[in-house]
Image 1 (tube, helix red, strand yellow):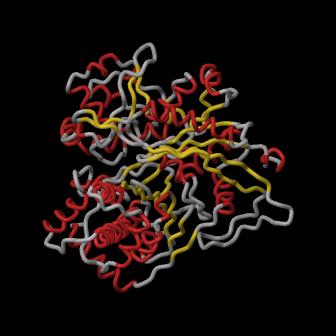
Image 2 (cartoon, one colour):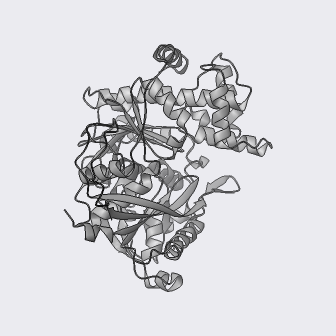
Image 3 (cartoon, one colour):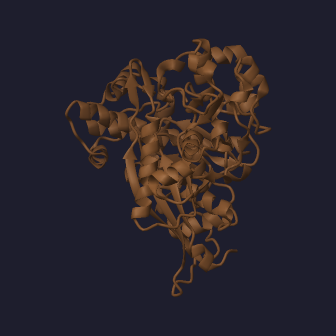
Length: 521
C-alpha cells in the first residue's frame, strides 16, 4: 500500500471522448481527513468493503462537442478538431492550477480508425461508424468466412460498423488510402500518436475490431489473409496500463508544458467504464449507459458458445486480462436523435424537459425493439419510431412525451432481456442487482424504469464512469493503486451510488410479456 503522502501528490488527466462530446477530467488521489475513519458505507451494492485511506476527487476542466462532418454522402470524424480540443484540455488543466500532472490518457468509442502512410502522415479523416459505406457488407463477410467460424475466432458481436467491415469496404472498392497505408491506429491510439509520436495498439479497443483472436489476444492471421489485408497494418496489442511515451517536444513547446507521461489505459470507453463499476462483489452485472447501452458482466475466459452467437453477445477485452461478456443496445441515441429532429423543426426542448414530459405520458402505450436496424441512422427518428409502431400494429405516439416514454420503457425492458441472457451465458449465475454507470444515469426516470423492469435494485453511479476508469488505470500504471479490488473500493467510497428499488412489479411483468411478443424476443 502506498503512503498517504505519496498518494496525495498523484494527479492524472483523463480525456474521455464520446460519440457526441468529449471532456477533460483531472483526478486527484487525496487522503481522507483525520476525523473521517474512512469506513465504507453500505450502499446496497454488495457488502461494505474495507476502510479506505484515500478518496478520488475529479474536476472537469474542459468539455467540447464532438460533431461528425458530412462530406457528400459520407460521414467523418473531425479528428484534428479533437486533437485541438485535447490540447486545450491540457492547457486549461494548467490554468486551473494543476501544474504537476503525473500522467494523461485517452479513451474513446470503438471500431473507428485512421490510416497512416509510411512517413506517419494521416491519409484521410476517419470515417464515422454510422457512415453507410458498410451497408450489406456484414452479411457478405459472413458468407465469405462463415458466421460461426468468425465468432469462434473473435467472440465479437456482429454489428454492421465493426472495423472488419469498414476495412472490407475499403478493400472492395479499391481504396487508394488503403493501398498507401502503412499502419492502422484506432481513434485513441491515433490521438495519442499525434501527442507523443509513439505508435501503439491498445488491446481493449483492438478487441472490438472483430479481427483479434479471442483466445490468443493477437491479430488473427487467417482472417487477415482471407480478407486480403496486410498483417503489417496492425501493431501488436499491448495491455491496458502500458506506458506509451510522453508528450513530444513539439507539443510541449506549443503548449508550454513539460513532457507529461502518457498511458494506454482501457482505451475503449466501455472498458474504462467497467473498470469504474463500484462493485463490492466478485461477480456483478453492469450497464454502461450513454449514447450506447452496454450490458454484461466480467468473465475470465471468453464465452464462445452457439448460444452466445445466436444472442449476438460479444467478448471484448477488459482491464487486467478480463473479458467483457456483454451485448450492445442502441441506448440513448434514440432520445438524442429525437431531440435533434425536434430541434430542427423548431421545437426546442431540453433533455430534462423531455424526461418530465415522458413521466407525464401514459405508460406502456407501445413498445419498440431498440436494436431494430431502422434506428441505426434514420433521417427522422420520431417518424421512424412511428413507422415501427405502425408496422407492428400499435398505437402511434403523437407527442414528444409519448415518444420518449415509449423509448425509455422499451430500453428498460430490453435491459431485462439482456440481463437474463447474460446470467445464462455466465453459467446460470443470478445477479443481485444491476450497476449502472455513465451519463445515462442522470436520466433518473430511466434508472427507475430499469429497476422496475428487472425487478431488482439498480445501483447508479458514477456518472463519469469512463473518465474515472481511465484515471484509476493510470494510477495502477503509476503504482499508486495495487489493483482493481482496491480501485473499486476507493471508487465506492468516493462516489456512493444511488439505489433504485423496483416498484409496480405486476404492471411491469405484464408489459414485459407484451414487449417480448411485439419485438419477437
